[in-house]
Structures are given as C-alpha cells and as structure tokens.
Length: 273
Image (tube, rainbow, N blue to C red; front, side, top):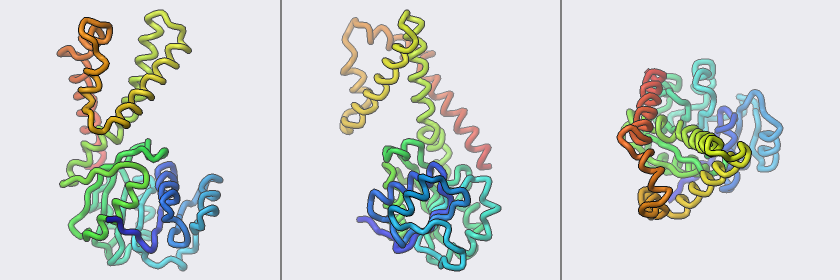
C-alpha cells in the first residue's frame, strides 16, 4: 500500500532535497501538488521544477498547510526557519525531517500546531536512487501518514523503519556515514596496489572497478549473505584466503570497523545532545 499526499512542500533543495524531488518526479508525484522553497536554486533545480510543474519559491501567502512538509534545510537553519515551519505545519500536516541531529521534539517545538513527525536519516547514494534511509515515526503519526512517508522516502532507495528514535544515531554511524567508509576502502586498496608495484593510475582503476562490481554483485544477490559471497570467492589455500587471514585477524578489519562506528555514534550523540 502507498499513500500519495495531495500537497507537498519541500523546504530546502540542496543535494538531498534535490535527490528527493528527482525521485518524486520519477514516480510521477511532482506537479502542481509540489511547492519547493529554496532561496538559492541551482539551474538544475529550476529546470527540474519547470519540467515537472513544481512551484519554485511561491509566495508564502499562496501556501496553505500541506499534507506533507519535508524539511531538507541544513540543521543549523532550523531556528531561522521556525516561523515559516510554524505557518506551514497545520494540525493535519505530516512533517518529514531529514535534519541530522534534530529530534522529533526539536521539530515539534517549532511547529506548535503539528502532531506528526517522521525523522529520517538518508545517505548520499540517494542521489542515484540507491540510498537507504532509517526512519522513525512520532507517536502522533497515523498509519496513513506512515505510508505517505514511506512513499516519499523510498523514492530514493530503501527505507528501514526503527522502533525507537534512539537508534537514529546508530543508523547515522552505519549507513549515514557508511558511504565514506566504502570510498576509503577503494582508496586504501588502490594504495596497497601501488605499494605492490602497480602504476598508481592502474591501481586506482582496478580498486574502483572492484568496489563498484562487488557492490553491484551484492545488490543483485539479495538472498545471499555477504559472508557467503566472501566464501564464494575464497579458494582454500589461495591468495584471497591469505589476504583474509590478515583482514580477519583479531586486530583486523572487524574490530577496526567496530571502533570507527563507535566513534561516529559518539559524535552523533554529542551533536544531537
């Protein structure tokens, strides 16, 4: 089941807001029902709105409280946008917030008439429709509103619903920051190739293609665990097994990644606290 809102206001259309708008356009959700508020629209944003009939920066007086108000501004702009949010968020408005570090209580404090907030943490692959978003609904969110939020967020990838808002910080540490970890893996693999004697440009191409292809293989094997994919490429006594002996040692990749995620989690908690 999906529920499509009859009116949407997107407040903020930077990289993630633009990705959401593009995803909605691909689903056929954009048109006169969508208003976009972005003080510094890029040519790409203007062209997207024009192509799909979205209203870009309409006068505030022309906007009634929408079914869905999607907050995609920078988190530090929440206070400066509070008056506009309060005007737009009516008692029946669903607020979908992707403001990192801002709790549902933070958002509701700026929207005194609103009762329904979905807090979400997408990641950057949303820009190509391959993101993953952790989402949690406040107590006031109805079943229909949750379906609406799922429709809006799944336009840029998978949505994982959380049972408790306290888990958002862990989502931030794993999938929100996770793309950077994967990009670093590609960097390190390229550097290791260079250290092994490969020309730097060749090592970079090999590392990049390996990470790209492995990710796509995992994407196309949804019923196969990553551990099994690893086993499938590991021949007993072979080169891969030798390398994995280092990566899977007691001081190898697993404890290192655990410490990295713990550091990101601690920082996320500090920023939201």
